Image 1 (cartoon, one colour):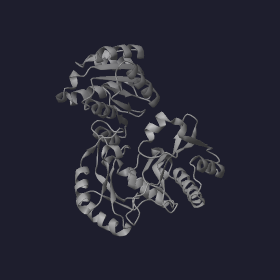
Image 2: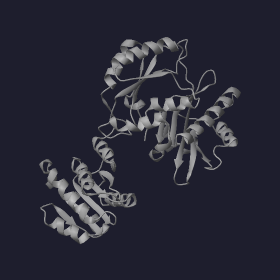
Image 3: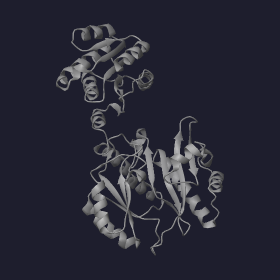
Image 4: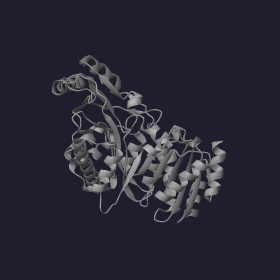
Length: 407
């Protein structure tokens, strides 16, 4: 579960990490009221308007703007709120901006003097390849960090964290050395910041905390300017009420409508940008199926694992979600019948097709691989319909059929 920046700031504040002053609003009128408060409180010459979406790359895509007066605050807010923001990390449609964060401009001093502080990049994340958390960091932070990682990988360092021992003091010192921090006050402040950040990472069961940029202020403080946090959904049951409330409202905004339907049904569904819909039981089989689709020249339109407890109604609703996707040109059903019987899957598919017949669902060819419990019964049920079905027994046959249909 991704958090908005303003939510990430609140969490870091709970761990005694200072973040820039800011107020979250949902309309241009609220933005002006917030700006009056912040102009008075910070004595700054300008404020920053930041679109709140679950994606990075906002700065270069028009999602972060500087405003120097209330008129600019109103106009910029009006042009961002309610609009779709397209970044390198969103689809072509972009993400709908429902909220913006009005924040102090930390690149100006209180005497209206423009400054260029040291900008660092720092993230703590789970590296599944080595089964450990790592700290990834660089003294060249900012909006060009992606280019830096591609062109100058030697400028990015990482520190592996032992999952039993946690972050050690010698590792903090090593990171400070590689960031070329020499001021005594900054060293002390950075040490306290990094230790607190790692405590937050562990306590909230995060799989990513990314701060870019992390700046050193004129008075040698360490200030996280932009914060991205991703939490492990499986641990939400033991989190505090604030995080539980975030999850409760998570699917109200900034999410694909098909994913919202799936969430309400308790389905493991993720919308992708491909043209081949797929319905599978079991996460491992689903991943293998998606790889096969990709290698055949198609592209998966979704991840959908119906699980082991699916009944006819659940299969019907799951399949209906795929049929609603206008980008789907063909559908692959790859089921290994065990706890979920193949005949139940067949009945659910038929029910879904006939419920969606007004939506041209009969024009979408269906590739079916049903093996296991009651597979022959399932095939008999399906043969008595007028559905555009192609039966396959192996993944290789499915591969060839997808390749032919896509062409």
